[in-house]
Image (cartoon, rainbow, N blue to C red; front, side, top):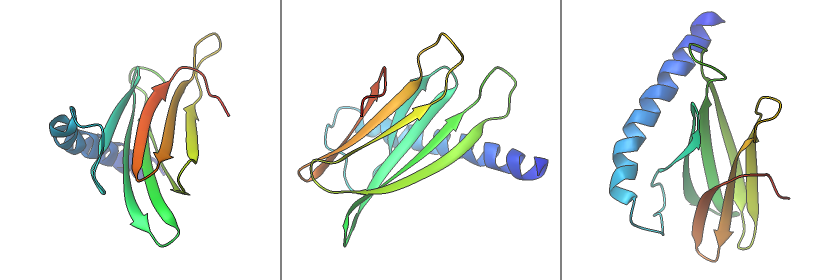
Length: 124
């Protein structure tokens, strides 16, 4: 089990590094293209990589979260997938220590585009 977690952590770091390069060239564009990675820093040691693909049922949005609870801790890597229709949104929130604000990501489909934003408090 430890080896699997170690491999997942390394894979998450490599994916984040690879996507950072792709996301940098995207920074000024507000309309991410299909299959183009969107990197979001969620604060602390947490980040998210989001991309979308057209599906027969809508836009499939895939988000990979990479977070470590504290310095020296192994990161937890989670993949979340959903299909969004125009006007729908998905909210993903990472737990935070008592007294601190949770890291929250809102992914929305607005007409023919996907918008990703870091928000302070989850709203449903």
